[in-house]
Image (cartoon, rainbow, N blue to C red; front, side, top):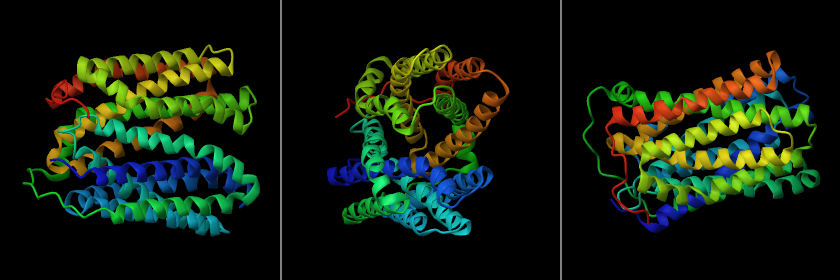
Length: 388
């Protein structure tokens, strides 16, 4: 099935706007909670956890809506919920109001991201790199918003930045609403429902969970190291992450062409080994410049790996791509939560070097687990069409 180009462009632009807004929110909320509301670290952690938990709970509902309703409408509803969440943070003066904003934001994330990825997956038969292109759009927003946000923060404060993010999210919702409505034809429901899909996709879901544990763990370890051991300021840390963000924007399509030629299993092995080498290398890095170079390598690995996982789920669960994406993202979020917890424990209880090497071993296991999962799912190793 070929989707209308303006439909896909709208989804990509909306992903840039929401991706950038979500990235800034994730970074600023802990700072805002401590500075503006005077929250204790435990309360800040609870605030972040509430959004994560709500997002996980909302994913089955989101998957069902994406498979049975107009997907651009579901994505627009998610973008609008994001806007309400940003506005809620801008106006919140107490912890209960902040929790309410977190709840709305968690639901918005579940609705929006599953819907836009399902829209991109609709065109896989014509353009096997459509999900790689969407990842580029997501990554563009995540680093492109940083400079304006950091410049405006001293001028307009946290509330002003949150208000501007609400405007960006509203613009994304308007873009999606303006796209002509299209409802995919209903397809036969396979036996077993969501549990049946979960059992069938279990090999890949397990690998996605393990990968997310390691990715989130390494990310948090690096942030802690840069802040506490190297004593860098916020803008200096942002500059270290910036080249990786640019790579994650520019490389998904390029690396997808490699996957088309060499196959998904080969791509999975190379991406896992590269990311593992990065994690191991971080254990012995002498300078921020070397850390930035290693982060570029791990960003390139994600640029290859994430589109493979999403495209495989779309192919294997084509009858219910929304449900498949909801299961995949749930696994990733649970893995990220576990990885962040493990990273904190390892950093407090052991050495920086040992922590990095443990996560490097976890990542390296993907070079074996990933290809095995693809074999068990029975999906083709090479996309049969050339990306457009």
